[in-house]
Image 1 (cartoon, one colour):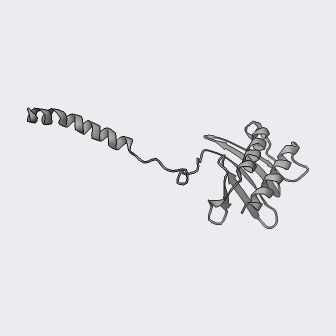
Image 2 (cartoon, rainbow, N blue to C red; image 1 turned 30 degrees about the vertical axis):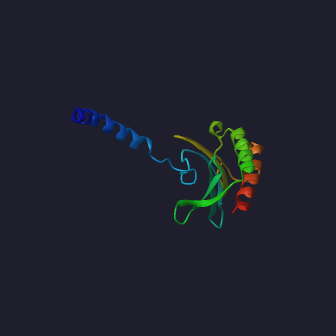
Image 3 (cartoon, helix red, strand yellow; image 1 turned 60 degrees about the vertical axis):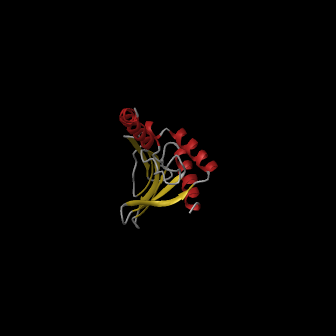
Length: 151
């Protein structure tokens, strides 16, 4: 009788082991979770005689990356305070970047780009007088100043 119990329960024990191991997988903590790379906005400017560019990528989590144009890669830059991040994203969403068709590059160009999954759209303008929507200029100035001061 003991042999029957042992043989009959072996598959059941194996099943419980498999379930136990698969359920005990450790999930990544918030600190080690990579930044979601499919939703963010980019703010940048550059050109002119110097040919210098500056570009930041801002994620909904508040993580900010700076683009190294020499190495052509983004590097960690800073993390925005929760209140600042909320304000920036509220103002950014009000711009409706995806719905805009403004492409006015010049000698020195300013740009704001939205990326949401496979969709992306960039708004560009060249000087203070060339941007037809004033909220883009004020968002750019305010956000750029804040990003530079978070380092």
